[in-house]
Amino acid sequence: MSDQRSTRSVPVRESTARPAGSPIGLHRVLEPAGALPQAAIRLDTRRELWPDEVRVRVERLNLDAASYRQLRAAHDDDGTAVRRAVAEIVRARGKMHNPVTGSGGMLVGTVEEAGPASPLGLAPGDRIATLVSLTLTPLVIEDDLAGWDGLGEQVPCSGYAILFGRSIAAKLPADLPAPLSLAVLDVCGAPALTARVVAEYANRAAVRVGDGRPGPTVCVVGAAGKSGSLSLAAARRAGAARTIGVVPVESEARALERAGLADVVTITDARDPVALAEAVEKAGGPADVTVVCVDVPGCEGGAVLATASGGTVIFFSMATSFSAAALGAEGLAADVTMLVGNGYVPGHAAYALDLLRAEDGVRTLFEARMDA
Image 1 (tube, rainbow, N blue to C red):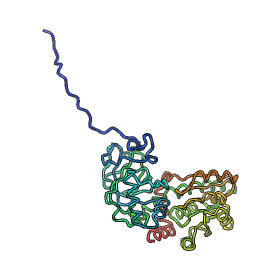
Image 2: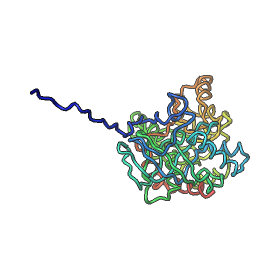
Image 3: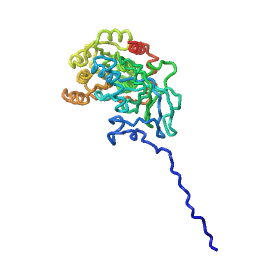
Image 4: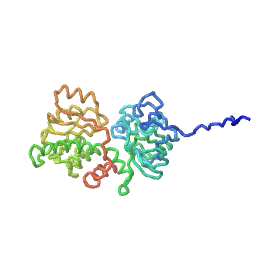
């Protein structure tokens, strides 16, 4: 009798595990196909996580300065209308992505759930600030922004957001109020890149003269603001021999002088290129490094004119026009390097928070801005 084995089929159970998503969030893009999340028109905001994602319970948004200024101007300083506009942008796009400025901001919240394959090192209960733009962060607002009057950049709210495998987040420090940490971390890329560039100039000066002096002259346009004040402090720490702070009005000049962050403070409309260049020259320029931190358009030409031949202009403003900067420099036959601050430098969060703790003038300016 032959050996006959059973031929009964055994059912195969299909895995219900969700396949790994894209670490840069391509799987969340609804339209157009193939776009990166930042450039997408609309994102998928479903709560369920892919294995490498993290869901955050949102407590507060921080709108970037250029976006908030545009929204207030478009709605004639009507806070209710601004609130409705922001809520509608988030509802329609699945993210906070101002269609006019192309910018968003960032957020503070508490981790609700972390996927098993998330590389971010976050756990449920961690209070964090996201260090990636709201323009690429899937976001759902659940309270219609009822707790926000529309008259400030920081937006208390309830909702959730999704972080990808390659997103960046920082755990909130225990020694600082969350709104203050959020304000600093929103612009933490600016001082870190400023420090890197200024240190390179300072090191070259050290090679030339042997003792590190003189270092570069650094001009910060929009010096009394968040990124501006941090950039001034970073420039001095990195070896700037002279710092020039440019502000638009007398009240900001007085505040910056009290803060003691700039060697010279000058009042100038940065949208007037000739006036800006002349003011910087009178203050000890032209600058070896010019850092543009204003939240209004039209400052590209003046920044180029205010910068010495062979110098560097760093643009941190979301209101910057690439074409105006590039073609303007070409038309002026200006031999300057132009950098666009992308908001990320390794270690930028810890560096900015350290500046806030160490520099009383920086903290004073931040707290005054938040109380205004």
